Length: 214
Image (cartoon, rainbow, N blue to C red; front, side):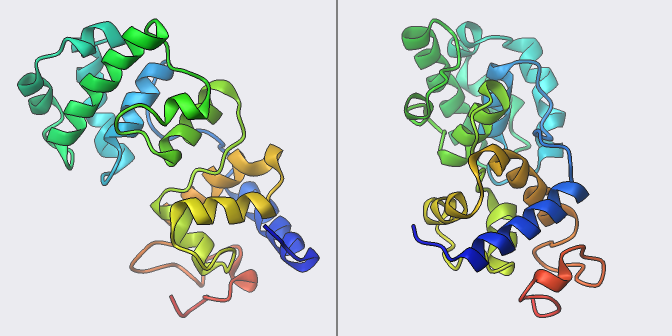
């Protein structure tokens, strides 16, 4: 994807400002290993990290590994995650992906993107988050907050997650992509919110074409 020197330099300025403001380049989800992170991210679709973090401790006490989660009673698991959106679909995905982990990967979370994407409930956002946090693979984590902020900042005109991911990859060097993704995510959660963005308090207001108009 073609980019101009101006676009690359502008993206660099935004990256430096946002990663300085939000330096914690790691998930806000609570987890102890890659399996727990994978489960937490699947559960996080259409809900908040805080809500997921309230559910997962009990879930992992009951089903602490892929082998036991693969054998979980569906109704019992649905009851465990009932407070989260789309809980029936998520419960089925967790059982199915656990079975695949046991049958194909000896109970381990795979490292390769192609293999992660074969797991039920796992899209590119989830795969990039797991691959970056667990295996150090650079990735653009294009969640809802990331897409909203990048669109407002004029980094991408496309709201399609895959197209946006490709666009940002062309602007941000691989070694900075994970940190940039987490910084933009935090900015979207706490400053550039969906309904009432805090434009007066925004650290990148001068670089934002949507300031005071979002």
